[in-house]
Every structure is written in C-alpha cells, then in structure tokens.
Length: 162
Image (cartoon, rainbow, N blue to C red; front, top):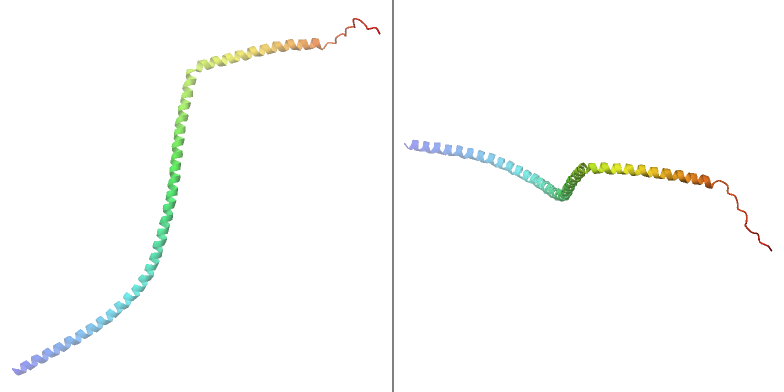
C-alpha cells in the first residue's frame, strides 16, 4: 500500500509539473500578446494625437465658418426683409392704381354724356372762331389792298412870303 501511496504522489507530482509547464507556456504567450497589444495601443495613441490635432483644427475652422455664415445670414435677412417691404409697397401701389383706374373709369362712364357735350361745345367754338377770324381776315386783306394804292399828295394851301 505504501507503493500505491508513492505512486499516487508521483502521479500527482507529474500532473502538477505538466500543469505548471502548460501554465508557463500560456503565460508566456499571454505576455507576447500583451506586448503586442501594448505596442498597438501606443501606435493607436500616437495616431489619435494626430487625429485629435486635425479634429481641433477642423473644429476651429468649422466654428469660424459658422460665425461667417451666421453674419451673412443676418445681412441676407435684412435684404430679404427689405425686399418683402418693397413687395408690400408695390402691392399697395397696384391696389391704389386699381382703385384710381376704377374710379376714373366709373367717373368717365357717369360723365360720358357731359364729356360728349363738352367736345361738341369745343367743336362749335372752334368753328365759330374759324369763321370769325376768317371773315376778319377777309376785311383786313381788303383794307390792305386799299391802303397799298398810291395816295395823292395834297397841295399846300398857302405859301409863305419872305
């Protein structure tokens, strides 16, 4: 029985030695993997520093562009408001012109008869004026013909003695 006991202890010792050797190999491989991970993380950290710098620059440029765009939008907003006001003014002007046109049209329709009478009176007045100045012109031309005839010089009525 002691042999069994020694054999058991020997088997346990061999099993423990195999376990330790396996564990050492695993730990060595884990050490290599961890070194590789550490190297990868260092490389990644350096790359992230470069990306972080570029990202910071891009962020500053983006903020600058956003401020510039905001200023231009505010300026454009005033232009849009001015154009809207001009549009409103033009619309009001059109409305006023339509009112005036409608008013004139309705006034002309109401006063069409009076306008026709005024035109007739004007035509009659022109006709009378033409006749008046036509006859007056005839009288003046006959007077001019009489005045253009040579006149006799009257003889002196008395002579002076010296």
